Length: 163
Image 1 (cartoon, rainbow, N blue to C red):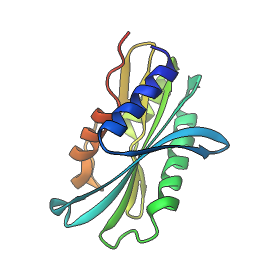
Image 2 (image 1 turned 90 degrees about the vertical axis):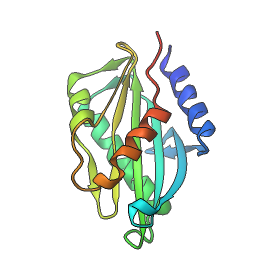
Image 3 (image 1 turned 45 degrees about the horizontal axis):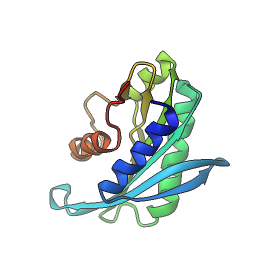
Image 4 (image 1 turned 60 degrees about the vertical axis):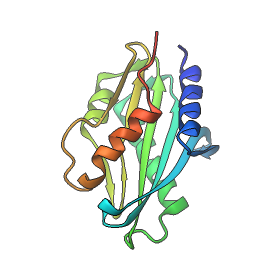
């Protein structure tokens, strides 16, 4: 499966899950963006605006993933973060898809979350050379109330690649 084919499958899965999917320009590059709001009483009646932001990258490094994750969170805040903190939050799943993923990028995806006031990012990489998806695996302390739902959303958007 090529990176572009995988990106198309992400788009299909997001649409099937009810997300509004568009192509936006982030840092002068076309980027797939899926938007889906969610409201749960168990989140203390909070609305969470989820953005899945994905693009193809030739070689994925930790630095590229970190910059992309920061851009994705900033994009999400600019779109729906005006009233953050008033029973309203923003989440982003920044996803880089590629055939060459450096080990430091995998480590970054597995260990780091981007945290802002009433906003967070959950970076992920899709390594098509090993057919693996890598994202945060540890315990989530700040924003932990959303962790199981975020992992579920990652599973919806990022199915394990098939050879």
